[in-house]
Each structure stands twice: as structure tokens, then as C-alpha cells.
Length: 599
Image 1: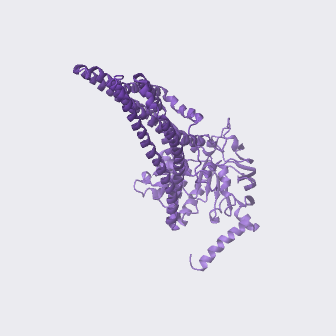
Image 2 (image 1 turned 120 degrees about the horizontal axis):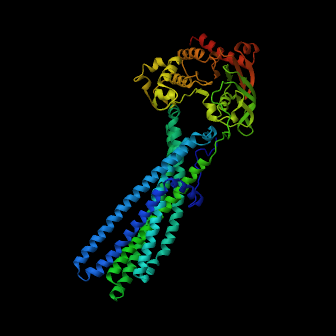
Image 3 (image 1 turned 90 degrees about the vertical axis):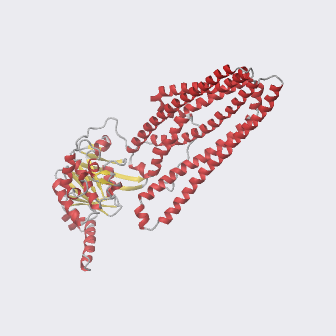
């Protein structure tokens, strides 16, 4: 595994037009809602611009002249514009939040669907925490872009342009005085963007690292506690957490400096306007109402600038998140389904490996020159030392990985000519480490299949011998399992996995060390069920315990990625080769235990 397995890649430009065009495509199904939202935002901005101008009219035309009746009308008009602005802003925010939630839903579904279709090599190279970050926090960041970024930017720009026009209309000399402080604001904004951009990158990369680390070590909590590694794990987590805290503190620091600086520039500009504009009023060159209105516009002038700085941060955050999301969406599975797959709806289960070799890493073959034929309905066992390639062989039969050299055929059809889903619908795989989902037992046996009735679920459990313990549970088949089925014993989980496999009635049944974790009584129960239920079903059994495979039709012995021996149990013992040695080692150990009185 790479040393950078948990290290999040640093991505994201401040702005990428290619990414933005691709992001905007997600708004296309809701373009009419977005259009309405933009129109509402423009009208709302006009309502906001009307306030200071109404103040000018109130002072110059009514207050100075002592016209209380006219002043009352202006007050009502002023309140009316505020009410209209508030109502429009409410509907605009509601619409964009609705659109944002719809886009998030679409994006999450697309990412999850993509992840489900990836080959196992993808998961070998990407920690689960990183993938979860894509589905959760990265999508949430894009939600901010759609709700508070894309459309709101138009509103800020339109408002800023409107304020500039109104100030130039009232008095262009005062407007130039205000604009004189802009170079300082531009420099401050540029520095702020650079610093915040780097701080944000650090936050994003460290967030993904902490998610990956936490997920992995919580999943492996049994190992952590059994080897008393809590303190060491805590210290490692503390290092990453400190990095994340530091990145957040840096971003907060830059905000804490920038926004007060903008306020300071605004205060200085206001002082300049009061000084310059006050002299104009005293000289009779400007009305008092115009000065008050200009001051209000000047105060509002800095608000969209502050907002645009915030939008820049949202934009650059969205660029980084979208680049990560699109990188995942653009990653192709190593399994390439044919454009016109050969029909494989119901297979008989005849399997053949032809001159087959495979390597996870180049120049490091795991399987070499495999030639193996398995007849339909035949039961074979694959044995060999750890690392001999047994599990890899069945992983490739299930097409969890793509292969290059040689071929695998089922019923004479190359796996590369089939759709992978069609193939897997004909295969049931039971692993040593059974994975059960949270939910009831029926759900875990059926796995959302509409083709398996409740009666079929119970029948499978009865035939495999799981019904005996299920019926004793509180709620029976509705008994709620915790995550990974932790509230059941190892043997009970294995029996449910067997019932699940049998309920799907596969043409090919693969048992990968499926009985190595159960007690002798449960193993006997499983063996009885298998003898009765596996007739006319192609079965591949991988087992270290050779006592469990004596009844199979053939035994395939693997060693260092090659098939070295093949035959029945008796034939292989007579050869006195690798199988004989494995058998002798196992039973010699048992004899020692018996002689010592331990059995």
C-alpha cells in the first residue's frame, strides 16, 4: 500500500471555467426556478436602492419645508419598499435553498451509484473515509455555491453597479473621493484571497485525512483495544486533529483581520465624505438630503464588496470540492462491460480457466498459467498455504478485478463478453468474515431483492439450519441486527450468510473459508445442509480445515500461484505431495493435542 494512502491530494484552482460549466449543468433541470430567482433578486436589489433616495426626497422636499403630510407619505412608501424587499428576499432564498437541496440529492445519488460500480482495485487504493468525504462534506460545499454563490453573485454585482450609478448621479466629485480608498481595499482583498485559499486547502485535505483515519480505526477498534494501542492511536489522531484545528484557526485569523480592515476603510471613506460633502452643503452646492443619501449609499457600497469576498471563498472552496468529486466521477472502473454483452441470464455453472495469469502489481504475478475446468454441478475444493492465490482466483471469477492474460469462461462464454451484473446474479459468495447490515434478519437474507418472498427467506433458513436460533430471537426474523451483526455470534452470522446465498439460488456457490470460524457442532450442521442442498450446483470451497472437504468431487492444490496437484482426497494422499504434507501437518497437530490430554 502506498505511503500516501491516507494523504488527501491537493487540488483546486481559485476559478476554473471548465469546472464551473460542468457544475452549472446540475442547475439545468431547475433552470426556470433559477431564472425566477435571478429576477426576484434584481427586483429586490432595486427595492434596496430606493431606500436612500427616498431619504433624500424626505429631507429636501418635506422635512426642510415642514410638510408633515408629504413626509408621512414618503414614510409609508419607504416602509413599503422595505416590506417588498424582505418578501422578495425570502422567496429568493427559499427557491435557491430548494434548488440547492435538489442538486445535492442528484449529486449524492450520482456519486453513490458511481462508487457502487467501481471494481475492488478502486477501494484498495482509496480509504473509505475519503470516499465518505466526497459524498458528505464536498457535496455540502457545493450546496453553498448553488444557494449562496452563483445567483447571489449576480445580486451583489447588480447592487454594486446600482450604488455606483446612484452615487455618481448625486455628486460625482464625492464619488471620486470615496473611490480614492479603493486601491487599499483591492490590495487587502488580494492578500486575503491568497491566504484564505491556502488555509482552505489545508482544511479540506486534513478533513479528508481525519475522516479516513477515524473510520479505519473505529472499524478496527477490536484490534486497537486487544493490542492496547489506544494511546498510540489517540496520539496519531491528535496530530491530525491539531493540523485541522490549525488550518481552521488560520482561516479565522485572516477573516478576523480582513473584515475589520474593510470596516476601517469604510470609516475613513465616511469621514472623507462627511468632510468634503459637509463643506459642499455649507457652501450651498449640495443639499442636506443628498449628503445623507450619499452617506447611506457609501455605507452600502462596502456590503456587496464584503459579500463578494465571502463568495470568492465559497467559489474557491467549491472549485476544490468539485475537482475532487469530478475526479471520482471520471474514474473508470477497471471492469469494462461490453457494448453488446452476451446473454447470461441463467447459467449452468460450467467454469474454465484458460492459460490464466494475474498480477495486482506489474511484474509481481499472483496467479501463473492456471488451466482448470469445473463441470456444471461439480463440487471442488481449493487448498493451499496462505498467499497461494486461492482467494484471488475466486475474486477474478466474480470479476471483482479485470484481467489481461488468458481467459475465464462460464458455460463457454468469456467473462469479458458478459455484463458483470448478469454474471454475479448467477454466483453466491460466502466469505469467512461475514458482513451483515444493520436492520432485521429478513432484510439481510433478502438484500432488497423483490424476487425473494418472506416464505423463501424462511425456507432457506430452515434448510440451512438457521431457523432454530432465529425463532428463539426476540422478534424472530424481524430481530434487529446492529452494525455488522455484532449482536450475533460468529456461527450465527455464518448461518445467515449461508441462508442468504441459498435464498438467491445461484448456479455457482463459492465458500471462501466459510466454515473456519464456526464451532464443531455448527460445522456439522452446515456440512449436512450442504450435502443436501448443493446437488446440481457448481460449488467451489476454499478451506484450510481439510476435514471439511473430503466429500468434494475434486481437490485442487495451489502453491505460489500455480496449480500443483489435482484429484480426490484419496488420490492426493497416495501421491504424498503437497496435499499429503498439509494433511499430515493438520492431523499431526491434532494427535499432539490428544496425547497431551487437551482434546
